[in-house]
Image (cartoon, rainbow, N blue to C red; front, top):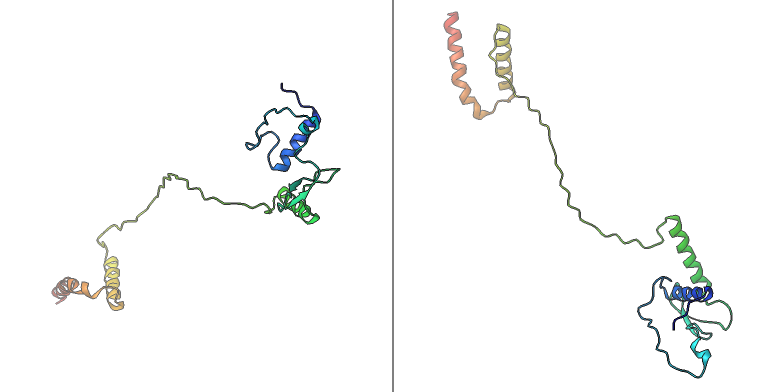
Length: 174
């Protein structure tokens, strides 16, 4: 026969679950309903797990705290533990890093399409048309030869072309 719990019994169950570190809406898998055994003492059936003289664990350091005969069930073994727990709750509420943060790297595969626009200026080969253009072109060739801007390996290929130019020039003016 199952009976409905009153408000006080619900609060007591929630308080016990909170002290055990279990939310009130979940049941501890270690706790199983006890078998109904007929007893001669009815008060023994209603005895709470946190009876006076019993022990509970401190909410901060885990040390054992004895339960007094009267009054509230203690949560902390000392004022130091109570203060440390308060500091951590306060820091967590304000967004500071009092709560230990564990970073877990997560790899995400992304497909990125990258479009590159490449502009290449191709030189247009044009033959000089005027005497001024020819003069500028020959002056540039002379300047590059003097500064060493034309490699020594390329000079033998230029030699016959320049020799032909000098011969043509000498035929014209002699």
